[in-house]
Amino acid sequence: MSLPERIYGELKDLASGMGIQITDLIKMFIKQGLHGDLRASGGLINERIRNYDEDITYLKGKIFVLESLLNDLLSKSEEFEKRLNELESPEIMLRSKRYGSGRINKP
Image (cartoon, rainbow, N blue to C red):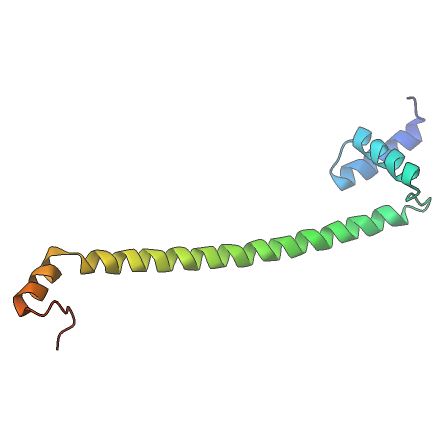
């Protein structure tokens, strides 16, 4: 397909602004045109870009929250493992047998 240089330049700028290739942009225009979603003013594209930006911001926030929860879980897991190793240490086992009751925290 042959396009005038001016139109090609505009498509190239729009595609690079969206982070996609010109061929993908043209495919998107064709698909939207077939489904009746294409507006001549480009308002729909700008609206979708804003929606994508909002979605990306939301997802970044969710990822931050999940990452924080995961780090907290890993920290608690490491603490649990450390305490379990302390309880299973030979020194504690000897002390519990020495006092006879098997209770580790015997007063």
